[in-house]
Every structure is written in C-alpha cells, then in structure tokens.
Amino acid sequence: MEIKIEESLQPQDPFRLTLFGDHGTGKSSLLEKHALYYNYEDGLRFLKAKQINLVGKPYEATPETSKYIYKNAKELLKQHSCLCIDSLDFLEKAIIDSVCKEKNVDNIADIKWGAGYQMASNKWRDFLNSMEHLRQVGFNIVFICHSQIVKINNPNLEEYDMWNLKLQKNTAAYIAEWSDFLGMVCHDVFTVQQQKKFGETKYKPGTSGRRVIKFGHNPSYASKTRLPLPDEIDLSWEAFLSAVAEARVEGNSAKTGKHKKVQNE
Image (cartoon, rainbow, N blue to C red; front, side, top):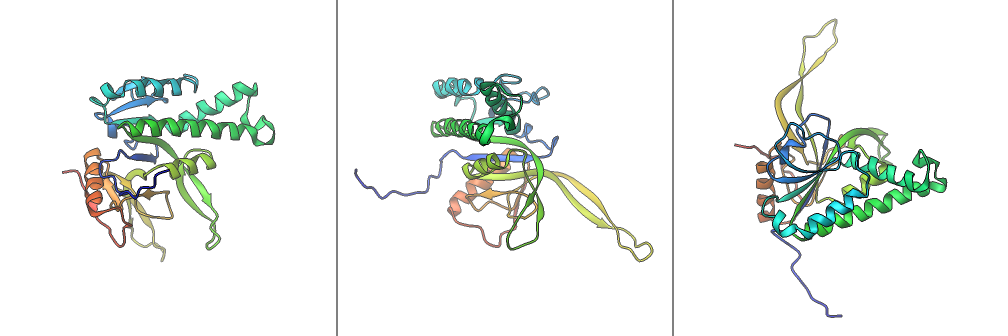
C-alpha cells in the first residue's frame, strides 16, 4: 500500500445538508429551482419542481431510483445541482413498512429481540451509502425532515427539551453524523413585554415574518456545521450558498464568537 499525505480541504466538494422544522415553514420550496426531488409525502403539488414520485411506493423503489439517477448522473447534473429527499420521516415509514412486510408482522416492535429495528438500521445504512455514491458523482444531497420535541438527558444538567428530527432516536443520530450541515428552519420569533397586571409581568410572542435557518449551537434545537457558518441565515438557497462559499474561503475551522447574519438581498 502506497502512503500519501494529501490536502484535506476540498473547496468544491458537494455537501450533505439536513434541514428540519415544523410544517409550512418553507423547507421544500427552498430548492424548487435547483433540486430533483425524491417525493415521498406529496407536498410538492403547489411547486414548480422536478420530482420522482415515490408517494405510497414501497421502500424498494428508493434504491431503484438511486440507481437510475446514478446511471444518468451526467445528464441530470446539467439540470439539477441537488438531490432532495422530501421527507426523511416519510421515508422512515416506508422503511418500517418494508421490514414489517418481510417479517409478516403489523408492528416493527412485534419482531423479537429488537431485530426489526436492526433491520431498519441496515436499510438506512444502505440508503446513506447510495446517497454518498450520488454525492461523489457531483450532487449536493439535501434531506428534509419534520421536527419533534425530545427529552435530553445531560449528566451535567437537568433534563431539558430540544427540537430534533422527527425520526427514531438512532436514525436521527445516523443522519446527524452523516450530514455536513444540520439546521433548523423556523419563523423568526421573539417576545414582547406587556404591561404589568397585579405585579405580574407577561410576555406576548411576535414575529418579524422572516423565515430563517438556524445553525448556531443552541440547547433548544439540534444543529451542526463543519464550516464556520453564521448562527442564522435567511431561508434562501442563494444566502446559504453564499455563506458556505465565504466559510470555505475562511477555512474549515471552528467558529468562535461570531454572531453574523447573511440576508438575501
């Protein structure tokens, strides 16, 4: 085996992005003009997007779709810079249904010794491997997922709540580990102090109307970035690409003390 010392930084390397958030926040429409969608949940009917319709299809249609895209990658890359999985939680349902069908059970929990969950994990690993092959031929990979509140048991703190991917716990961890960027999509919300009544201070929620992606480390939501991205950017594909390009110029180092915002002008 020949040993080589190589430069690790790959300035133009396609990335792996996972976005999660509540319904109706604009996750799907973000890539309307840029992505070829794996459509699992039928949420694209009001968008002018290119899709492969997998709504109601068995999980086995997913690897077949990936093989087709890999085979035709050269032509598809001329039209689509990204592949968008919309959404992970609907894909998970297809995976669980596939496992149940293989074992002839109604519920994955009915498979003894947790073997059903292990089978699902194996399918997820196969899926992520296929996404990696597609990334290596030039596609940016974007995962979309809904959100849920989960309990976090931190040995240094009391138990607290966090927004996370709406997936099985182990699956959410696989996706986070695989992703280069993990951001929460939400509306810009703040509180306004109301007049005191009977000595009690109350706060009223408000919003600026902006929709943002949050990448900054915060105990209230899951996040991750391999580049020094801003803590928060506007929900705009151009704004995200601009932030990534700037961070790549700065170098792949941890962000310290930065609280800048990138807005779509």
